[in-house]
Image (cartoon, rainbow, N blue to C red):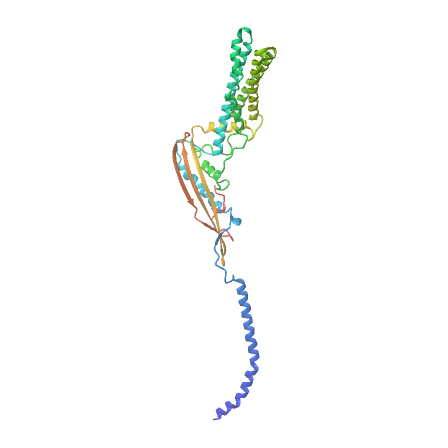
Length: 376
């Protein structure tokens, strides 16, 4: 009983103390809730929104586009070694280039035009001299026959003069978008890997500094100019004979002078179009010399027609927690055909290679030294 009485006496005092501590406890609870809410808000601010999807790997060539070419570079070197092993060992091969082939054909046409024009002028000079010598009463019959030949401009000479337009525009070939320099890179590797099997890369330097072909062409042009000078002198003599003649003879001689003058103009136009005193791509004589020299050096060789698609792949993968990771790879497609000069197919093949991706740590040099060094 005493225990119950003591408890009853103490109960009011204990209830009063709890009522006094209630505001302080409530404030502590509210403070802790506010801190938790602030921490939650800060955490949510650091995370992506709930509607965001997981990040995917992305190709970013603007930041690291050239880095993938390192792997493609290695693929080109490996494919060159493989092609060298496949090429015939008994004969050398010249790499086919469409622009160079067109240049060689045009150069041969220019050379042929010079030779034909010189031969025609020599024949015309002979016939004109016969007419001048036959300009006597006893040779009037022979003179009439020669007059008939001189009134017409030879069609072959005119066709030769039309060839002057061959090099007036730059020779070019439309390339497929495999990347600038990919084919040159591969042919350089090919020449380095097997110099005994490849002669003539088909592009670039073609022997412009070799003066033999230029001197040979210039001698032909000088011979043509000498024939032209003799022809012009004989036209002057024939013109004076026409001035002294009368009647039908005068008209026949005048027609012969007109025909010979037309031929002379064609010869002058052709010689001027050669631009023998100039150098560079605008000079047909200069172009003809360089392409004829290349044709002479590669005569009788096999023709290697090769095409290449070479691409470097740069993959930048973004991750929420680990940041960016850079992976490099490369893809190469090579197809080639080996022909005889007459077009007979000797061999053909197509190969492809994909380089195993290499991961590069953007924060350091975790890749091996061969990657960061200069490959030979």
